[in-house]
Image (tube, rainbow, N blue to C red; front, top):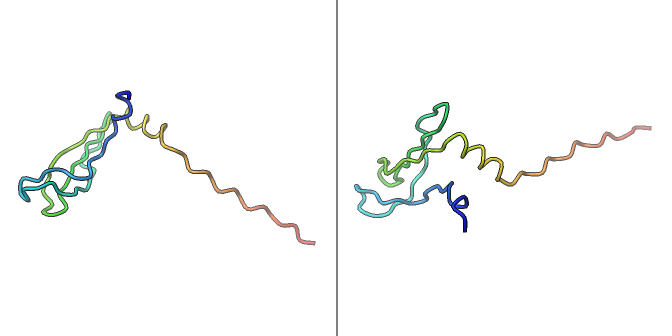
Length: 82
């Protein structure tokens, strides 16, 4: 397996010092900079910050390019009225 497969992880649970156990987390956009975005992970139990993740502009573009695209809905065909 290549390293590229594991570059864009997002955490679903992390250890929380306040709760003293691994807790589910939610990701919150903390900061947007020209070259990267910084996300904060918040514990769903006590809402304390338990980690951060940075996504560079290059990683974001790569993730968007690799994401499966949803097929566009076809435009409705006009019906002829006679």
